[in-house]
Image (cartoon, rainbow, N blue to C red; front, side):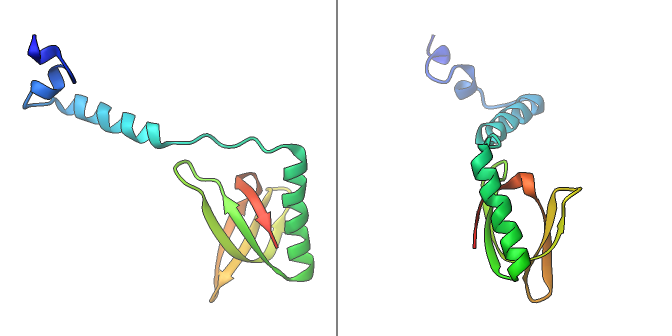
Length: 110
């Protein structure tokens, strides 16, 4: 009966089938995932206003970008706004830039 206590047979077993190992790894990865936040309309409008102001006045903007496992923060100047694709081109410095989907932005500050 000791084999069935605690962590069950996994703990007492010295071998593991590849399928079981893959399942355990996949489950651990899924547990670390987070859901995309639902922004209220006011917050979405504030983000879009900050983007428009940064673009119009050529000011730097700080964006927090949603990620499945962790958010990232970008800082730079808005070079292009593609309204039909709902994305912006952000110049992050030294000739580097990045396309950012507006739907991935969870916070914006000038």
